[in-house]
Amino acid sequence: MHDIEPYYKWKAYYDAAEDKKSPFYGREYSEFTFTNKVYNYFIHPQWDSIGSQTLYAKCLFVDYDDGYAVIELIGEWNDCLNNDIMYLKRHFVDSLIHHSINKFIIACDNVLNFHGSDNSYYEEWWDDVKDEGGWICLINTLDHVLDEMEKTYIQYYCQIGETLSDINWRKKHPKELLQEINGIFARSIKQIR
Image (cartoon, rainbow, N blue to C red; front, top):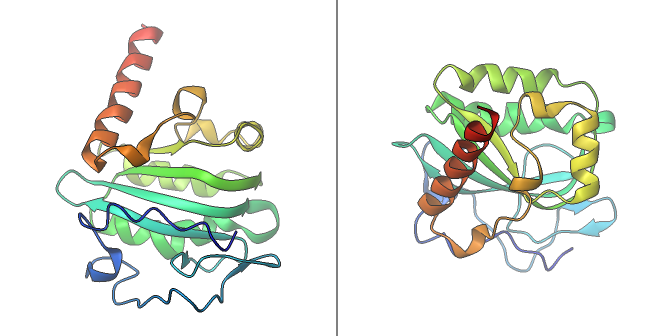
């Protein structure tokens, strides 16, 4: 796991360490000193700690004008033992919501397992963004992770599913990714009608 870096090709567009509104403002990163672990496995030092012992994040892009953020996660998302959703919400997401971010694209390509608990923090997050036309979207979840998420019923608060599980987001500009997600949502609404 130590060689899995957060996606870095959008750094020309946004760097959380240079964004005064970011909870990671002013952070300095090492390329060589490995300190964070998921269980006994070191992870790349570019990942940001959110307080969890098993889940780490990287804020890849924020657009305050359009009100959206792209966040990449790595590790085991364990709400059952570690209450990881609380750490994600309180130590990271709440700061973005405070600055009018209401659309969240969460890249879960490197989330290896999910262990659910209750869904109260997901409901709170949804309540924080829905009135402003916002949403929470989890993309590229592994099949077994998606199955566990659905057993916890977070699909009532987060957009998840097969149509969001195969998005080649790394080859896109962040605005193109937002347009693609909005397009998927628009097609889903048409199919329901």
